[in-house]
Length: 309
Ligand code: PLP
Ligand code: CA
Image 1: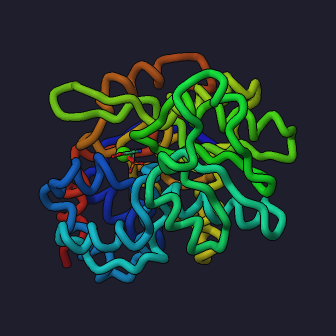
Image 2: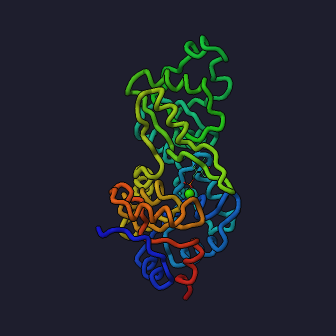
């Protein structure tokens, strides 16, 4: 196709682009809200889109909430009512992946929080915590002799604020059983931005630690992996040519959308500046060109004028 140009989506063009779409996939943090604060005008824009019979889905790399918890957060922040089945979080999609990839009765060893456990439970996949009781003791002898569960056939790494050396040891010991034990990561986001330029390490750091120890690469569920889009496409009838991916991050949202043949729309309410886009646009490197979106808006509230009657 022709080169993507990151055009500002003015109301006239927005009317045309939205008119040609039947589905919009929204990244969450940085697009709809920042932390607990809704982006001004975002809820109104989504209500108008829903009133125009657009299908809205929510696609997030964050593995620390279930589908149901996202539906609840959308409602709490004033967004149009969403059903859990419209939400594609990396916790739900990871459980879906393991359900198809694991033999019946096989279990997952999980580095992650309650949302991952809940989604695995809902998918019928046996899994171990690990809570403090499942962890080896404090010394090197404990790390190499702690009990292992015989039926574990996957290590799943998600956002885990209680990640620690003992868990890394157990993960390696399971993965050393061989290629029959899968290594799956929910996403590779390396930093989670906070306000004022501050940041905390993202799940990508934890996935990397396990990959380095195990000397192999994880299968990744979240953006830019196309697996998360394939989940949406297998649960709804999706025509990529009539689907818009809206996101604030180039190396996840926009790259996935471009790779999957979607129209891509960048919003500047999150982590990306136009200067970064310009750098990619002016580069001769093909892999940087695929980080350039078709369009951008300052905020998805800018879509409102195009949605007035
Ligand atoms: N992972 C975690 C743990 C997060 O807290 C967030 C954002 O808050 C993300 C990933 C990125 O989520 P999204 O794909 O919705 O921007
Ligand atoms: Ca985001």
